[in-house]
Length: 383
Image 1 (cartoon, rainbow, N blue to C red):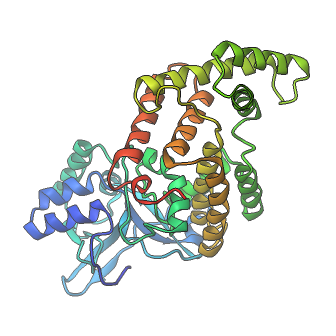
Image 2 (image 1 turned 135 degrees about the vertical axis):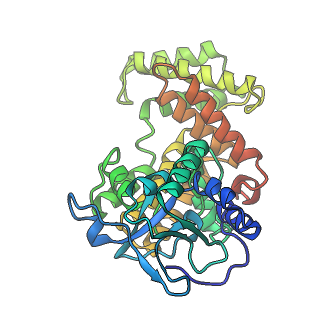
Image 3 (image 1 turned 90 degrees about the vertical axis):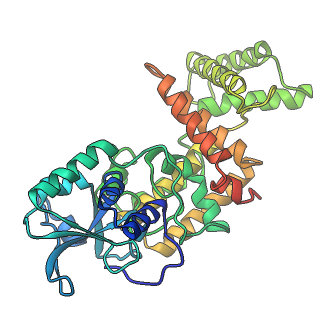
């Protein structure tokens, strides 16, 4: 399924598998697999067949004289192919669907990061215990692939989408066989993006690059503060800012929203910028000038989803990413500014019910990206 020479483990998962295998520690292998995303290769034709659930693939391991079900960890997926896709699974799902006691599970076969796992009934109960203890694939983690772009324009563009990759616990810098898996990539494009084919993808990408989805009203509210700052020579007071918002929205409603909506966005922006200062992620007197990062970051995500859904090929995906890069660079002066723009947009648009969990989650993502030594925000120059 995958071959090649390996200078280093592609991700932390393969490193842990290698170390556990070198020790001959089968319990440690199961611990790693219990927290890993595992992938099964299948023809795209089968994946697209309505109501059809393909059986687990199997092959004969002649050297070991047994039949195995081959699966791959996230770092070991081969390059993108138009007709072959991947279904994501987990150790407990494999245990529940296992077809034959005498078969073995072969993880990353024919690589230094391989693991051969027996699959009798007692073994599968151990799989389920490891999956339950590990809690499944982790979210809120910064996951880097050592063999994918780490520097240069493509890596920079991919890093614009790192907030969503960290949120979902996915590799941030891979542009390949899938984003999450084929079926999920297709489903996520359909909802919420209303993308059903290549033309939809191109239209949605243009809209995001032009930052038409982040919201005209909150951008207008921030724009008023920028204009006031230029006019006064210093940031306005909250009262001066609020007065300008009231006057502009009462005059002719040029932004597609009413005064009540604008006032609520003003309240949310002021509230969250205040919290950013208290939590030390925004300096005293600091502010967020634009929410463009939210659309630019989501544009990268849509490109990766479209590649996974086979609505574009790798070259078109790379070209599309580079279209996002320059508008983002023009809108912000640093990774920190970009990240805060993304955070603020996410928070003010989803400030419903109990916003505290989302705030803490967003803050954790920002801190991981701006403080972790392995983060692209620490290793790729902004300009």
